[in-house]
Image (cartoon, rainbow, N blue to C red; front, top):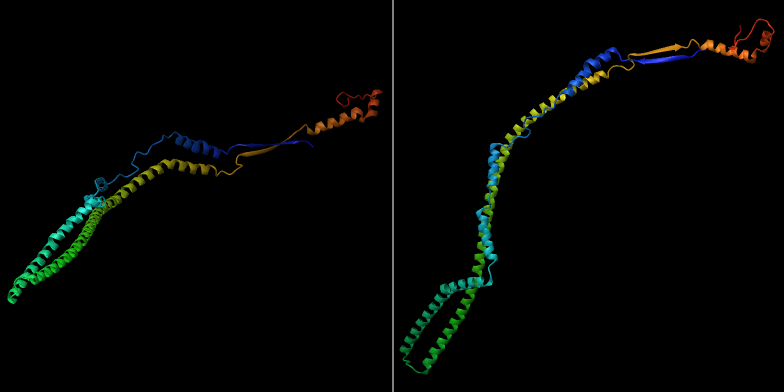
Length: 298
């Protein structure tokens, strides 16, 4: 049998070729030729007038004067040396002496004078004039009085010192309490002002957020416009891929006409080379049949 040759010719379908050359490629070239268009709008909304005013208020905040006053009080108490403390106690003790001890001693002295007058009157009525016994009696009573005076004075002085200590402690506590009240009031005032400014910032943020939404919508529209040609190109590319495979392919089979004849020549050649010995000899004897160089007969 003869050999055969199979040829497959793949040619683009005319409809597909027309789609690519007249629709898809021009569209792609048009996209590639477009220049970049930057977004020219605002991307971030600015602060509102209310927020600007609140921000200025934050910048104007200062440390309340009450805090400075409270700090001065704390410092004065913390840095007070023993000498100043002693002077303070001496001052309070002297005030107690002037206001309590001295009047008490004076009152006791007046009572003693009244008692002495009474004693003189009693002595006169009893007829006791002069004498050692009267002097001794007066001396004893005077000694008792002075002992009571000394005891009372000692008690009052002790009370005066304790009173000075208590007064100094109470005064220090009052100063600390006042300083705490000052500091608390100053901080409360500061927090109140900060709260007002924060409320203004929040109220302004509501207005700013609405403006930001409008800016975002404008930017989203810009992005959609920029992406639209690529979206359309994707649709066209997808449509180009919808053509089925194999459209436009031609397959043909070609047979070799020399295949059978060549095989016959090969067989005859074999006979002439030795497979047909008697015929060769016959030809040599003059039968008129001769072999040719190509393995045939003439």
